Amino acid sequence: MNVIYTEKAPAAIGPYSQAMTTGNLLFTSGQIPINPATGEIAGTTIQEQTEQVMKNLGEVLLAAGSSYDKVVKTTCFLANMDDFAAFNEVYAKYFTGKPARSCVAVKTLPKNVLCEVELIAEL
Image (cartoon, rainbow, N blue to C red; front, side):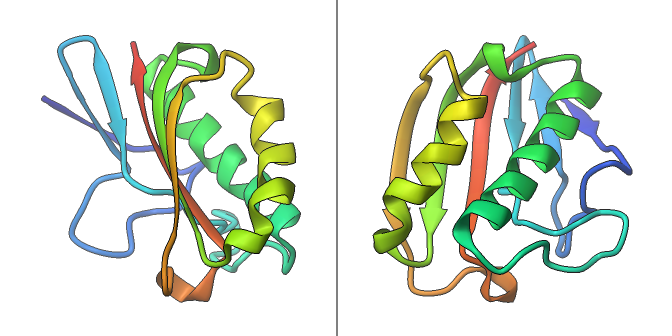
């Protein structure tokens, strides 16, 4: 197993890694909309926050030698399922290969953000 880390995505805010690889697979931790340059939450709307999450995931994918077109599974967490359609608009721009997905509403996300996404990808 190998730890994946990039300064172009937010550092872990707990005892975990941004991502791990094993064999030919990448497993990311959930990414929330933290701007890695400032450490602050990016945006106030679901669209703005989803864009930052996707940027963060893209940097982790790149650091591991993978890409969005190699993603096989995502798990998406929303603070409010009323944001589902707006979240999907942004999500669809990045996950054009339509990987398998689960999307659930949760009571609260870290730092009270609106969304979090984790993924599994091929290397």
